[in-house]
Image (cartoon, rainbow, N blue to C red):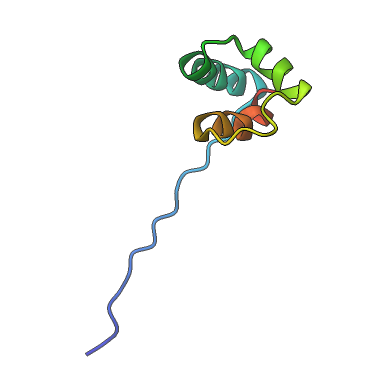
Length: 68
């Protein structure tokens, strides 16, 4: 009896340009915070989300580089 085989699935990698990143994040920011993207980024830059423990906001913060 041989060892079981495992199929390796490699995910497709899709690169976004800045406009596509802004569009993606803009919708999520509007849905979760009710803000426009520029206002969210300004608040982020001012440090308003530095101490947040809100998982939804943390996800948005991690996605912010895609919009810059």
